[in-house]
Image (tube, rainbow, N blue to C red; front, side, top):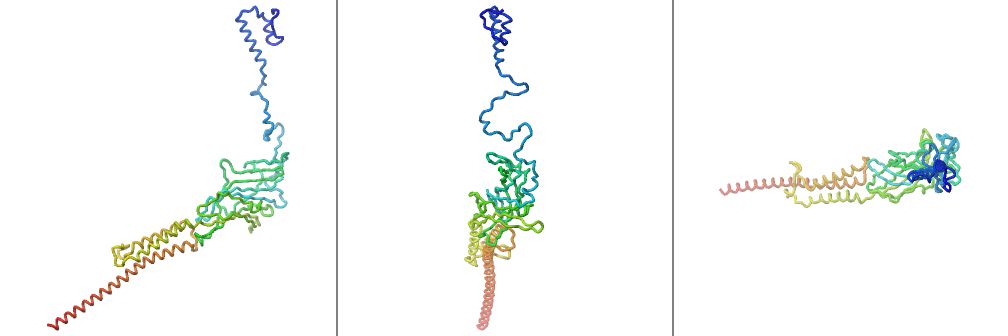
Length: 412
């Protein structure tokens, strides 16, 4: 069938094609079609075969992916979690029933947002970090490296219940996600960090305002655990409190930050460890010199102008009421001092004691008010004196008129 000397593969589709007909006896066009068909069959036979029901072809993984195996990849069979969270009861503190668990604390103050004299509070943004050891979270590790988690793991394990004493408002930042970080070490050491903004009360003394200095405190304490269950302490003493060098306030100079700690007693529950973040503020005086002291001083000096106005210069005076004529400069200064006093008190709390600025403003107000009374007194005394002079003149005219009549009668 096949012409001697022809080339035909030993196996495969070419053998079947060659056995059917003699290639050299076929016309040119059928031979071309047969050649293209055999070539296509040969190419298809050399392609790698895909497994039935699978997707794209599997490629050999690169050596870059072999260096760091994915710990979160789900393996066949029973999974073995690295942190055995479900094997323990985390509603109880570590070493429950034993000695108090030590919890170290350090704070980094990011900013002092505002100081409100009216509400007697301050707003602070800080990073609050806790350190403790929970052997239930220990895990085997050949490299002794820690693992970092976000806030989702915090809801499944035990964390210290620290709160801010005398806090009015506080919240954990949640943009773009909850600003919570949890870092677990192989031996069970835990680092728990949060970014918090808190508004807390600050008892201020304004006796020397505006030459005053204020000391405020942010207090941290465990809500449920007494000192027998949880020992709260500053992790590195005074070094546990860090502040940003760019912290500044418009009206205050921040003199210093420091930490203290002591025990707080509640009659119904017991003793608790309490940590204090203390900071001292000194008020800038230059703002009040420009806004309060200089205007008040000028108003007092302006009220002295009426002392040099002639008491007989009635056109230089205007009447406040029909019966009472007062100096226009005196009325202006009195109203200006009243406005200054009202503006200062509007920005201050309604305290029951006298402030230093109150003494200065009220003394200035008294000087201005006395200058107005001075003109009223001078005007009244001048009027009385003029009445007496008119009476004397009338009496003199009467006496002269009588003496003139007598002289005329004597002459007549």
